[in-house]
Image (cartoon, rainbow, N blue to C red; front, side, top):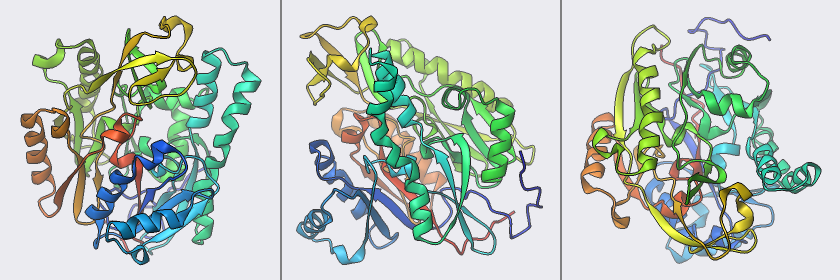
Amino acid sequence: MLFSCKEENDNTAFYYPAEWESHQAIYIGWGYEAEWKREAWPFIIDIVYALNGTTPIIFLSDTSENVQVLKDFLLNKNISPDDYEFISLPMNNPMAPRDIGPVYLLNGRGEKKVVDFKWAAQEAYKEFLIARGIEASKAAEYASFLERNQKVDSILAIKNGHEVISSCLTLDGGAIEVNGKGTILLNEYWMLKYNNGIPKDSIENELRRTLNVSNFVWVGKGLMEDPPDIATIIPGYFGAGTDGHTDEYIRFANATTILLAWVDENERDKHPINKGNYERLNETFQILKQAKDQNGQPFNIIKLPLPDLIYRPVVVVEGWATSDTTVGISLFTASDGYKVGDTITQVAASSYLNFLVSNDKVLLPTYLHVGGSKEKEEEVKRIFTKLYPDKDLVWIDAMKYNWEGGGIHCFTKQVPLSTNFRKN
């Protein structure tokens, strides 16, 4: 497999910029037709208010969505739609631009390219259906509606005149965490599972070719409350998630600092999910203590507290549909042992690591309104204030999206500013 061997100070070499580098705009997903999409509108408005006047916003929606509905909604909130761009694309579920949106590359000349990775959800949904008794060909047919999302990144790239680099790798945007200097963090379990049959050295070679990274830090599994699709976590408890995207548990804060979600030892034995998370995160912590950056230097590792577990009782009902109080039995496997009428517990994918760094603000989730620990949130505030002294911290209620397995970072996607120049 071929890849570029250009010197790092060669301004023609493309690289994947870190999130804290300047943004030209931020994509926000918007949906109207489904009820759960409309319920996310207050969350959208909070993000718009947070970014207003500092970072341009581009709304992405399905071609079936009525953009005028969103414009009217913005007007009702005293927000002028004339200040924003609206793009409709042939895609399903526009609410997750992080994972399906373009992976932009920049070079020192201000030129842009886009990498078109495969999106994991289509194959994952097919396997989800097979595990629940759907015949394989039928499962593939049912999952085919997600095919349209596989080219969202390429369509946006071509629309803006950017060259597209096609890749054989499956790599969702929420699973890409780089420091902009050549180092990438990779969830080994996730990468090998969703790139079944591709060995680690081939994955590394392809990431060298596409993202121009040179230093690979393979870390442990993600959070237990971030399972694949909808799945039982421990008996009687289930969650919805991505199966371990890095933006739920491990992030770069700057080129030398890694934030790692953490469960303290005094909380480890309070709940089986806490214990499981402690074991997973401690495995990654031990890896990070031995890891080096692209220059051979150790990382500064900061443990960021996980919110207290957030969960709610739901009743098992017939079918596939879910609500705030019910869940369809067809979403589970026979081995889960649930029966219609059972009350089981849903756990939210809550994490302070699902944050967004914008040009002059950091958007963070808050959990105080649902009984979260004030002491933990104060600790998170202290850490981020120190890390980003020149940026305002904006706290947003992301719970509606947490129940669906996402958060602020998933809901957004930055477009890097083309005038950036790589600093070595």
